[in-house]
Image (cartoon, rainbow, N blue to C red; front, side, top):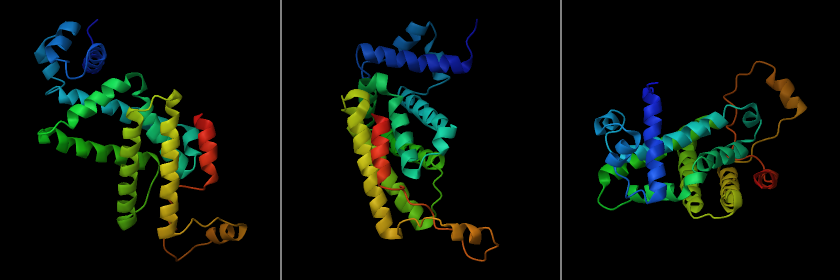
Length: 236
C-alpha cells in the first residue's frame, strides 16, 4: 500500500533519528535516509528543503505532544504553576528516548557562523513559548504579558539545558530544577503585582451581581507554595 505524504514525512524524521543514534547527527546524510527508505532525494525535498528542517520537524512533535497533554480534563484542574510544570516536562519527555541525538541537534543549531539557522531557531523558541502560554491559559496583557513571556522563556531554556545533561531516573533532577524556578517566578510575580486574592462567600455573591468595574486581576504565574511539594511527589 502506498504511504500517505504524512507517513512518508514521519518516516523520514524517524529514519534520520535512527541513523543518528547509530553514529551522530552530524554524520546523518539525506542520501542515506533516501536509501534506507528506498525513495529518492527529490522525494525528501518535497517534504524538507534541507537537513536542518528535520530538526524543526523533530521539535514540532514535542509541541504536538505538549498540546495534546493540555486537552485532558486532569490538566484543566491543575493550578497555573502545575500547568506550566506539566507542559514543559511533557515537551521534554517526548525526547527522552533520544536525549543524546536531541542534544546533538541543538549543538548543530548553535554552530558558529550559521546565522541563517540560528535566527529561525530563536523564532522557533518564541513560537513554542507562545503555545505553552496558550495551553496554560495565560491571559496577561501588555507589560505583564511581556514580563511573563521573558520569564517563561528563560525558565524553559534553562530547564532544557539542565535536562540535556540529566541522567537521573525519570529526569527527576530536571523536574526539581523546574519546580524551583517556577516557585521563584511566583514570588517575583507576587512582589510586582501582589498575591492573588482568595475568593470569599461575600465575593461570590458580589460577583453574581452586574458590575461596572474593570476586568479581574490576572492570575499570577504560579499558584501557592504548597503546590511545589505536591508537584514533586507526583513527579517522583
